[in-house]
Length: 143
Image 1 (tube, helix red, strand yellow):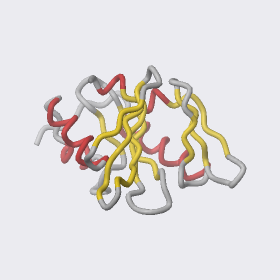
Image 2 (cartoon, helix red, strand yellow):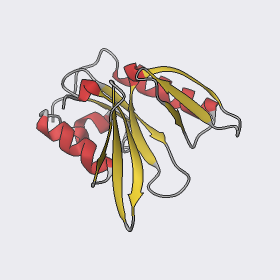
Image 3 (cartoon, one colour):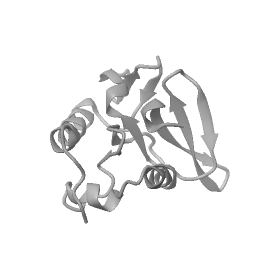
């Protein structure tokens, strides 16, 4: 599956092991039995990406945002209160975000999904702006 068709990667616990839920643009969900980090790293490797070079743009803050070779930009967002917590959302799949009843930010995706995050609205907004400013219109640096 192409990264441009993935709307979000959500961490889940599969018993004692980590897993992830892949949400596609057409609304399908598919559970994978590997961590979100392993899934995104494998996806990037298949595309010929070097995530280390991309992460250097964020001065060592691991996983803040990733630019894949097809132009897809993924931003890392806290999705849960308990570990594993961090998932990825494709930037152009985010239609809007707003504060939910419990004060946490809810992301509205292009596929019609509503994802509750573990962060407040201000934190999500700041994180998305940082990734957008850093990665949009930029080529990955060579190592």
